[in-house]
Image (cartoon, rainbow, N blue to C red; front, top):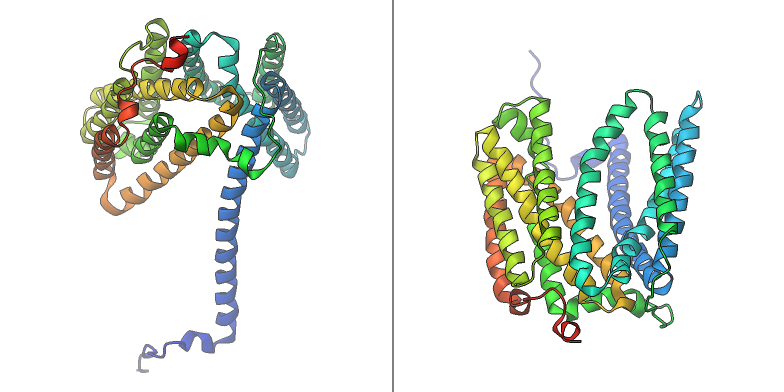
Length: 395
């Protein structure tokens, strides 16, 4: 019987083989290149978002929205045409999606910062509530409708999107050009980064943005819903759909309530309370083994999160000068968007290490700790009573 080959103890033994050296170099360079691309894309997206925020302060926000919706309309039309062809081109679809993504990058800051130009300041909280409600409804219903229509062929949902973009374009054209304070500073890194500097200097806004960002980062229950539905609550696909609908139902209901009965006093405390309830709901969801209790916890989380979003968005709009509002909105979008992605990554990584339930429960506990800590670190935010700045409320 031949002797078993012994394990080499030489430190660089593998590099003695020519093919392995090339293999090692290939893997190293590929990984290195991918990490360079990831970092570069992250910074590029950040830079582009600063540019889009600056555009919202330098040009008419209504005009930017109209132009972006026009581009989106053309993209939906192209997707419909490409899909109608017998041999749809995947590169062509990706090219259209790139154009659509660029349009969305400019659309977001302009859309968020336009509302305060359309209504009196005392009505901005109401507008924020309705905007959030509409976004939640569209986010819940849109994927369902798109999925159902796809069953009739890929061109059908694209055709519907085309019709909806036409409606959006016609609607924004009906908006009268509102008064807007434009920034007159020459384009530079200083003007592009002015939104970040304002958030850093305005501690009330900094506290609101960072609290929501950290709370979302520590959340992660949504990313792990499939695991809860199948392995913990023992539900089928319908159960997963029920769980996913829970936060949206709570958010829409709370948004409608806030539109009817806006927060008039104790806005800072209301935001902290909302984040705390979100943390408690996360703990209950993590520990629950009963489907109805899990759904109730998710509804409460959605409602509590809407309180936080409502206060944060209103503070950003009203505690920011009009000529900076686009850039501040852009920075806020970057922070919140990044925290959502990182929150899902954190939840998945921790779940693989310590388990699904401990990950969610610890996230909820962490949210409660952060809420208490932020209440002490940002006393000005905690003490905010009215969402309208005092100097404007007295004017």
